[in-house]
Image (tube, rainbow, N blue to C red):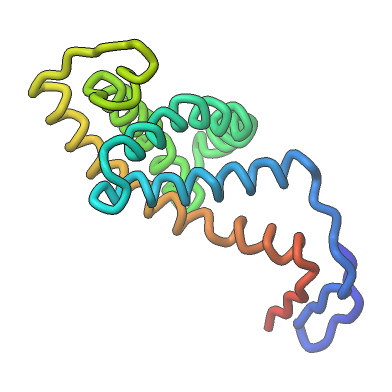
Length: 172
C-alpha cells in the first residue's frame, strides 16, 4: 500500500490502483459468485426446482475449490489460535469450521433428493423423507452460518473492492 500523506492519524492511499495478486482476485470473484449463487439457490420460489438443483450442483465443484483456495488461511489461523483468548478471528474460524460440514450435508443431501438435474444427466437417485428433512434442516443452518461468514469477512471483501477500483480509503 502506498501512503501519500499522514495527517492527525488519518491515512490516505494514492489514487492509483493498488496491485491485487491474481490469486486474491480469483478468491474474491469466486466468493462473490458463490454468494450470489447461494442467494439465488435459497430463493427456491424464485428459481424453481430445476434451477435450484443446478445451482446446488455448482456447489459440488465450487466448495472444494473455495476450501482449497483458503486452506492456507485455515491452517495458519488454526495454529495461531491455539493458546489465544477468543476474539473476532476465533469467531470467524468457528463459523467457518461449522459451515464446512453443514454446507457439505446440505449439498450432499440435495444431490441425493434431486428430481430434475441428476435425471437430466441420466442418474436417478431415490429420495426419501430422511434426506429431504436433512436437506431442509441443513439448508436453514447453512443460511445462518453463511450470513455470519459474510458479515465476518466483510472487511476483507471491502478492502479488495477498494483495491480493485482504486478507491481511496481514509481512516480517522
